[in-house]
Length: 189
Image (cartoon, rainbow, N blue to C red):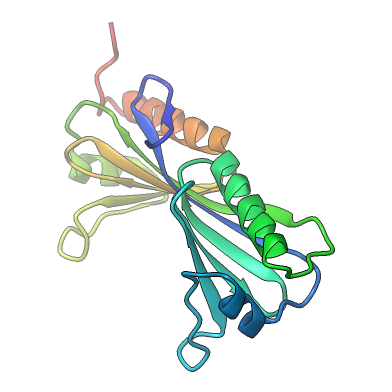
C-alpha cells in the first residue's frame, strides 16, 4: 500500500534511488547465479532484478551502480537494495562494500478535495504553465522545495522531483497557501 501522508491524502507512488557498491560486478555470473533476473546485453547493458517484496525493479550495472524504482517509501527502497545484496552474497557473488544509497526522485499524489480552475490559476501563479491542448494539467515549478507539481481540474496533484518526504508536504502546503492567497481555493472552517 502507498504510504499515506498528512490529512491532504498525500500518497507516495514511487521512489527512485541510486546506489553504488564501488566495485565491479560480473553481470554474466550474476545472471547465471540468480533465478529470475533479466540480462540481455544486446538490448540493455545491465541486469534487471525484480523483487516481489518490497515490489521493486532494480537495474544493476557492471560498474556496481544500481537504480532502484517502484518502492513506496525511501525505507522500502533501502530494504530492496539490501535484500538484493544479501541475495548476491548468498549466490557466492562477493560484495565487499556497503552500498551508498541516494534518493533521486519521489513521486507522490494528493487530492485537495476541491475542483480547481486551471485557467485562473495559470493567470495568478508565477512559474506555472498551462496549455490544455498539449497536456490537461497545469505545471507549477517551485524553487523551495525544488519540485514540480502537476495540478488537475479535479483537484488532484502529482508532485515529482522531491528528494525527501518533507519536500512533498512543504510543496502541497505551499500550493494550498498560494491558491488561498489568490482566492482560488476556499478556506477550511
